[in-house]
Length: 139
Image 1 (cartoon, one colour):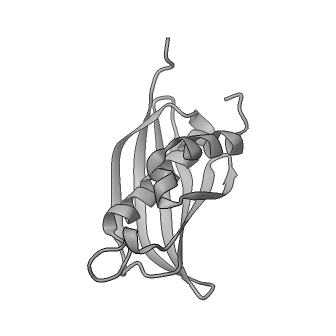
Image 2 (cartoon, rainbow, N blue to C red; image 1 turned 30 degrees about the vertical axis):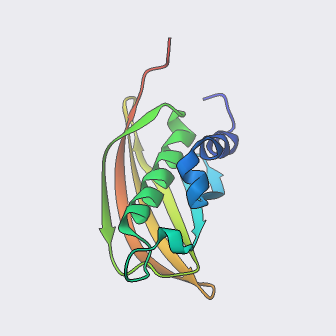
Image 3 (cartoon, rainbow, N blue to C red; image 1 turned 180 degrees about the vertical axis):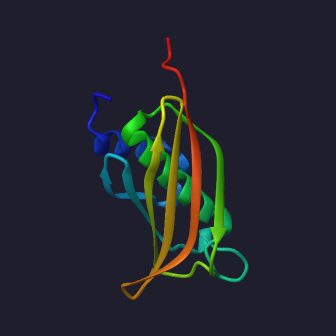
């Protein structure tokens, strides 16, 4: 991969309308690891006032995809992902910490932990794993 991974991930994040709507922000990026943050907004909450599980999944999926992109390039597609909601996601901000577990030629395995941040304290609210397929280059 010729492009600086941090520049690549910032570019991908900025190009996705959903990411912009959610307020996803790339906090840190290095080969094989990305941290992605999002502020709390009422629009992303569910009926009990917690972060909606769909947005929990989106944060985990996106952070994992970005971590994979730092080593495999931007042409990736999620083949499978799992999310484990460990406690209600309530906080002022959310931080997804994703890393590449194993990179192959055609697949990249990643893992992520999602934290809710309230008054500076981080609480683990969800974990997830993603299997991404490396797509062939466009002709």
